[in-house]
Length: 250
Image (tube, rainbow, N blue to C red):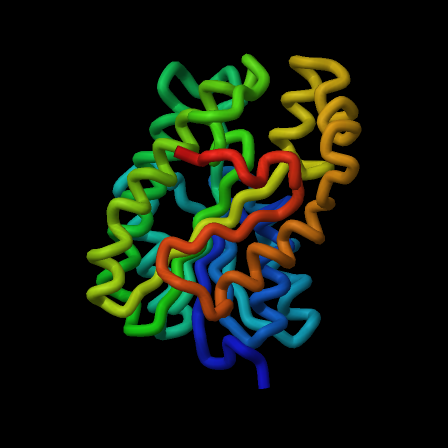
C-alpha cells in the first residue's frame, strides 16, 4: 500500500529534471500522475513509459500554463484520466530564456501559478495538498542578494510565492493545504546550466559557499515527501543552503 493509492497528482513541468523525478516518486506511492509538458512531448512520453514500466499510472498532457486554456486542460486531464485531483505540484518555472519576451518570468512564475491553482481547486477534495517549488535565491531575495543574471527570475518567483500564500486561508476553508519547498541551487537543472553559461563559475562558487549542492534526485525526494507530510498550511521546507538559515525571508 502506497501513501497515495487511488489518488491523482499533477506535476507541472515534469517532462524532465526535478518534475520528472517527483512524478516518478509519487507514482511509486500509488498516485496516478499527470505529466505536464509545454513543447517536449517525446520527453514527457518517456517519463510516462518509465512510470508504467514500473507498474505505475501516468498520462502526458501538453499544456502552456501561461494560458487559461492550458491550465484548465491540465486540471481537467486529472479527472478524465484518473477521476480525482488530490495533489498539485507547482514545479514549472522559468524566465532565464531570452526568446520568450519581456515579462515572461512574471507571467510564468506568478500569474500562471495562481491560475493553475485556481483551476485545480474546484476539483480538489478535503485533504488535498498543493506544493510550490522555489529556490533559496528567490525565497530569500528580499534580504539576501542573488546574482544579477538571476535577480529578475528570483523576484518573479518570490512574487509567485507571495501570491500563493495569500490564498492559504481560503484553501484551508476547503481543507486544502499549501506548502512551499525551497532549495539551494540544484546540480544539473536547466536554470543552473543557464546561470553558469551567463556567469561562468557561478555553480562552482555556490558549491564552495554551501559545501554541497543537492542533486536533482535528492531535491525531488524532498519535494515529493511534502505531498503527504504532516505539516501546517503555509509550511516552508528547506533543502540545502544552510548558510541562508536564520535570515529573514520577508
